[in-house]
Amino acid sequence: MLAKNAKEGFLIWSQFSNTERGRLLTAVSNKIRYHLEDIARLEVKNNGKPIWEARLDIESCADAFEYFGGIIMALTGQHIPLHNDSFALVCREPLGVIAGIGAWNFPMQTATWKAAPALACGNTMVYKPSQLTPLTAVVLAELICDVGIPHGVFNVIQGASTTGSLLCEHPQVAKLSFTGSLPTGTKVMTSAATNIKKVTLELGGKSPLIIFQDTNMKNAIKATLMGNFLSQGEVCSNGTRVFVHKNIASEFLDKLVVATKKLRIGNPMDETTTVGATISKEHAERVLDYISGAKEEGAVVEYGGERVIQPPPFDQGYYLSPCILSNCRDDMLVVREEVFGAVLSFLTFSSEDEVICRANDSPFGLAGAVFTNDLQQAFRVVRRLEAGTLWINTYNIYPPTLPFGGYKQSGLGRENGTAVLEYYTQLKTIYVETGDVDCGPLYED
Image 1 (cartoon, rainbow, N blue to C red):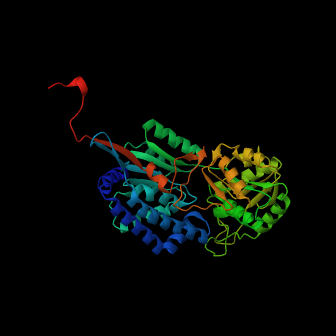
Image 2 (cartoon, helix red, strand yellow):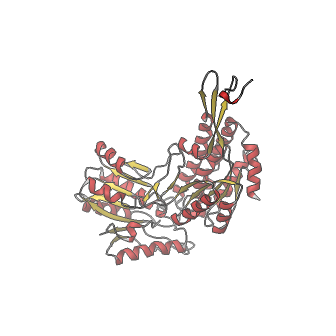
Image 3 (cartoon, rainbow, N blue to C red):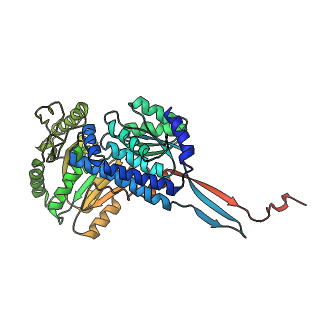
């Protein structure tokens, strides 16, 4: 039924001009800003992240709708002169109904990164949030309706993997946009191939964070915290393989442990909390299993990696202390696989060539960072790193103006930036003959 509603909505929405759609998306942005505090508090209940992080997430949603509401007005085609007075037009047109499937770590932000560009281009969407975080996608749908966007343009369906599979296979769906794990992404891609649908995949990562000896150590430590422990470490782009030059490794590790011990674990609604609740019991146990396995392989826990019991009413939540593992090797499971939790693998290196080789030795290629005061070295290294999103002297910054996505098994396509518009449109080429048809000897008067 929702796919039918979306198809009917598409027939109306796709006829709106870019200016009309842009104006309405900007209105959605304004609505989000007006209700930001209420939505942020709902997101905390939805996900368990600290309130100050949730505010940043919701602010970024408003930014995305405002950005796409603006740039869509500049989406144009091409006029190409041909022989004599003939010409061709190349037009960008919407695809139709988009199926969006979201993740639980950034619930409303994930929905926004899919919906804002898709709707801007004239598509409609059926969106399935994670069954673990169903709330804020519904709020987004309400706000979209409130500003006057037609019925059926943005639809939310709840459910687990079976619902997602039915959505992927639905004949009225023209494209799939999925954020989540590699195994599930593989299934989505298989379904897309079977049914000849376009697909965008934003999957996992095991990103390197490389710190050279000339770096500003304080900034590098702050970025390492940002790149590992925000949102309880449940961030696909996190730089969980922290490579530190051997000449500063001991000092850096000591200072990193001191900084990590200062993080405050507890009630996500408390303004002073910096580490909230892990998404579920099952996921907390998975994270702890990785830590146990790492210890068995010879890693040393410098700090954390334990459940921290909270006072009522938070004692039923799963709060884990951020974990720093030293004595790590590249072949350890915790270094090779995405843990998706606050677990940092500390590694050392001796040379630029060595660390680039080790950093690229991964099936993933989502993100990475380089810390150094030598910008020539920084550019040299990032050019050789096999990842789609890279930072120099910072980490985990995602403005909607820039494309985000990965190399290798970290996904296909991009989200955000002007680049995303090509993933939500298709090209139509129109040849216009203004003179007589020239068919050579095929026709005689």
